[in-house]
Image 1 (cartoon, rainbow, N blue to C red):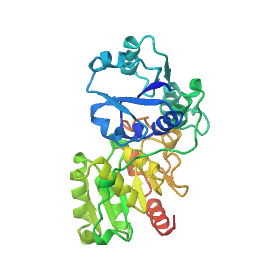
Image 2: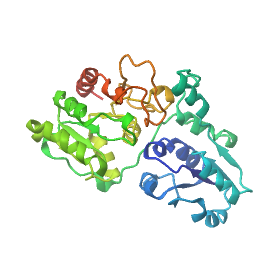
Image 3: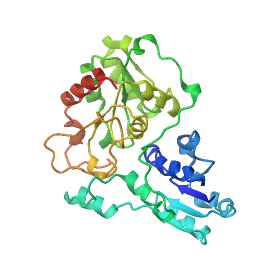
Length: 329
């Protein structure tokens, strides 16, 4: 049995996308350790395929000596940045296998609209390809997210017959609906709604709830109130999940939920669309904006006043939400 270190420092969605690699390694009878940033330890914490979690706040040097003593068979570098490459300085005798980031192809796509990305490319496939030197291949089972049983709290009565879960936030402005448009979207949904997000999304959630105060019995917010595991459990119970290009979207895909994915400045063409989600899931992109994608992170927009997120067709989103809600799993 080999002892293997898998490196992925951030973020929530990217870590969820590594879960097939962890499962494939574990099912091949290898001992799997992971290295991440301290704030993202909870994403790995309940994964049944991981035997040890290493974490850093800033620098590899925080754990380098201890890692060198583990005598790893190899390192699977699924981050492939300067910090992860520095690990080789400390584990210089250990073979490293790194995934292909395709940064040049992404730059061509975002800067000039030239699509040189591999056909039907998804970053998960590139993650799995790092295992080829070990003779391992895709098991076809998709993503995983493990929810502790203690999270299975019963939602209040108004939501027990079904609800729509909406992920409010995102790291960058180009990946999320402005609060006014989110309030408008919620106003057009005639199903119970639960808003999900972090502490930074509380203000937006308050605005949306106030704008829809006539629906207060069938609409609530867990923004800043729920742990990641609790949020995942709410996603698990939802009939439909609405999200941008975010971590909660990837968790929903891991839970095989019906997803209405709203794209702003990023695009499915960048290879981060919902991976093996429910087959009825849909991607909704802005209309008539042929310069997209604007950036690979959603931190820049080619249109005035973040035009991409303002041009997402809410009528299409509402139709998709209602259709998927009424469709049996």
